[in-house]
Image 1 (cartoon, rainbow, N blue to C red):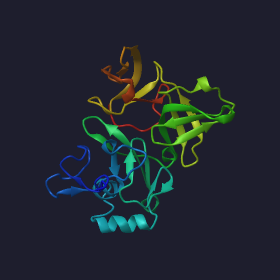
Image 2 (image 1 turned 45 degrees about the horizontal axis):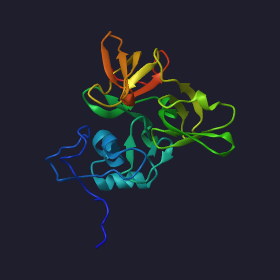
Image 3 (image 1 turned 90 degrees about the horizontal axis):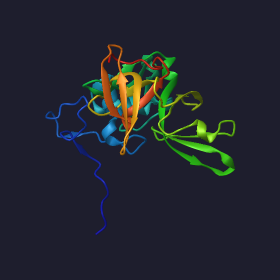
Length: 244
């Protein structure tokens, strides 16, 4: 007999701990739809609207809001109530004149930060991979699943894995290229030091990975692997952050 594929349901108990849901109140939780972010590092749009923003009390109310095209993620209307909202995504509710960015908080995990409309016009994406296309064009594969094609005016060597881009949304225009190097402003996006941010003071090469040391404004230092670090500015962050 053929397999039935993956489950369409998710029990609340094994749901990511940063989801703001009561694990013992009900048995089931919304399961993120397949999308640009992994399930363990994303939040279904339904939970964002109902539990986090309090724009709805029931699933039916969420569906009504979404069906009217009243919610945008990264500048695009989303009509899937379980669309996976992930790191650095911009959530906009035009009717409420509210814009938010999903960012990591210390000891809390992924949560929303209210931002200005201007800041909601761009996001930070990390370069995860590069692909050469015909004609010498370079395709950058980014952390949120999107691909950006860089034309001939930029050399292939200019963009490296681990660098980040400030992109306008939804146009996907590169506003700033931030190199992954010492002296830049970094944000730890995962691991036990999630949400900590500050100046990258050291990048140590080891056999298995790069170890990054970040120093916050109080002089406290944090070590983590390079895979967990996003460069979010040169000397100062380009995005609003919680206190480190």
